[in-house]
Amino acid sequence: MTENFALQLARWHEFVAAPNAAILDELLADDVKFHSPFVWKPKEGKASATMILMTVTDVFQEFRYVREILNDFHWMLEFEAQIGDFSLRGVDIIELNDEGKIVDFEVMIRPANALQMLGAEMNRRLTVQVNKLQNYR
Amino acid sequence: MTENFALQLARWHEFVAAPNAAILDELLADDVKFHSPFVWKPKEGKASATMILMTVTDVFQEFRYVREILNDFHWMLEFEAQIGDFSLRGVDIIELNDEGKIVDFEVMIRPANALQMLGAEMNRRLTVQVNKLQNYR
Image 1: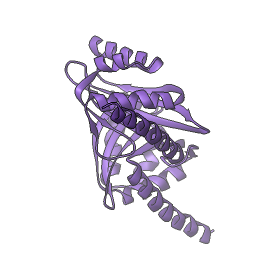
Image 2: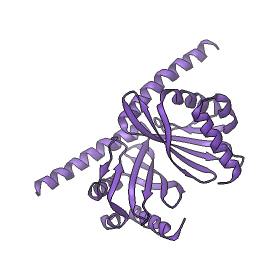
Image 3: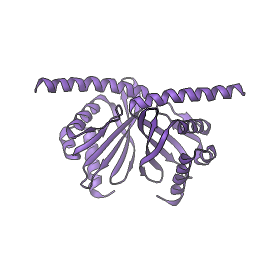
């Protein structure tokens, strides 16, 4: 792995250790695509990806990465976490452009019961946030 | 990627192109663990993994791999497929031992609607197979 990509990966791990939208602003490309575990169609743009990543890092408990498979432009980062009483594993599949910015971010989660609970909780929190944004328009 | 592992990967792609339990018998370690997208606890042993892999390759339509991230002992193989009217993406996360045998096989699927349909179809087919096996005891 070349130095620039290794630095970006270290920065991503800093984000996960202490979630902070300023780090995402550095790492994500403006037109990043975010593929969630719930819907086929990706969300486009830094604002959507930031809102989702800030929310999901707050929902997961005891989050830790357990396996990584890496080359410069593609990272597979596998994690374990708890949600309520359920244990889950997931993957972040991350694709970078020549400048080391994240252009594609895909998430998959198993098993099905934890995925369902995550979906319900994400839906609840994102609805609250979207409503807040609309009230301030 | 060293030669032995590249050969095993080529063999895996042969299996996917034309599913055949004899290839799995070569590739899978006797005590392989299979982590399904549906339940937390892995299934252990070659017989379970073989039954699941032979069934799922029959359920997926238009299966093709779209991204691979590889080192010798760990492979992340991402695929797309159709199930009924739904499009899905999934990953096979595969871990090999020193002899190039698959000791760990994990599958995750997105999005949630395709996962649910896959679960229903796998359950139906595996129940039929288990009943057949029990009738022949």
